[in-house]
Image (cartoon, helix red, strand yellow):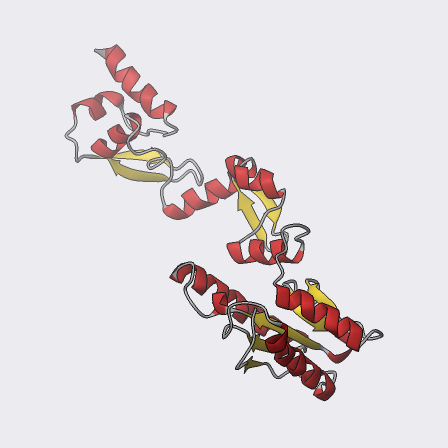
Length: 260
């Protein structure tokens, strides 16, 4: 019988609990009786019922009785975590050893505090898989012919840490060509919501950087035609002529004809 009591206390110890009670009293007590334990983090005593202590011993309430409060539990977990810095915003974050070796971490070899930071970093450092519409390629050719000495950047990623379809640094002027994916739930509501959130981020980032962002709605026509694309080229040329450094207004131009 004595051996049985000692094994009961050994079970508590093996599960990380520090009992401050007599094992014989514990064995004979009713399930709702309170017993004293010592907090693993702060060392202070706290009370817990017999049935919850037994649940921990049986593996049904892991770590529940090791700490006196959720605060101590959180602090203890942070002690075990590894300190890293978000690759995008440099915010301090703490990861468990298992998270350090997760599939996601190994794939990107960087750490991020949120999916937004991960998306911004991925967009601004992407070197493959960049998809461009026929309209974008045609506009690049035409603008290069019209303004051979003007520094016009296409798919620029460094100005706001996100991709801009067309960017003219000397005028602090940028253009986004938004097709139907930016306005209609073609791939579902969730995808549309993420796309529009990303569009709002670009507008906010351009405003903060002093860039005049002109968003051109090209969703009215579903395929590329040179005739209708001339309209989009005219919008860009007209805005370029009226643009001036330091302007911050952002707007959306809705085209009657065009394709993205």
